[in-house]
Image 1 (tube, rainbow, N blue to C red):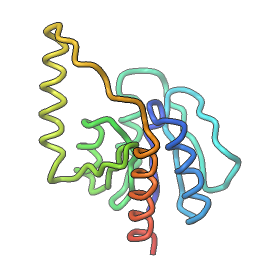
Image 2 (cartoon, rainbow, N blue to C red):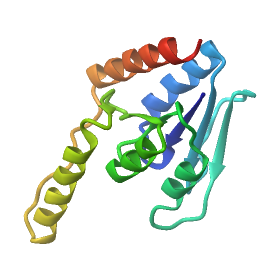
Image 3 (cartoon, helix red, strand yellow):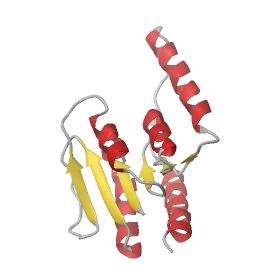
Image 4 (cartoon, rainbow, N blue to C red):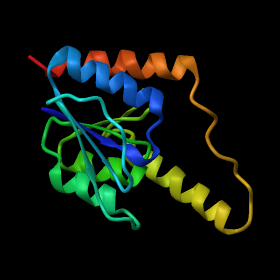
Length: 149
């Protein structure tokens, strides 16, 4: 079991939670991004820098992920792809993306994209709050406790 992070858009606070969890549990953590991402020195934590381009980091995650791995991402299409590969998905806000909810989330994403394409300002997500960080840390701990036996 491994942890994979879509690191280009992952908040620093969430990355720090992941670093601590990897060290505490001994689980391998890989951050994939198209830019350098600083990580603490550890044999458990590494980064993969991919070329810039649309979905290059996502494609690398899909290529590497295995069944039972956990992917941390806000990217709904990426989440759908790794779920199809029997991986688990957690957003940086601590929300699980599952087979049961991913299709509805894809439809909502596409609907919002259509609105934006027609000139309607839909706004973006709010900033990450302390409650979001706690929800993420708690969900990650539950996942690690259940899957790292």
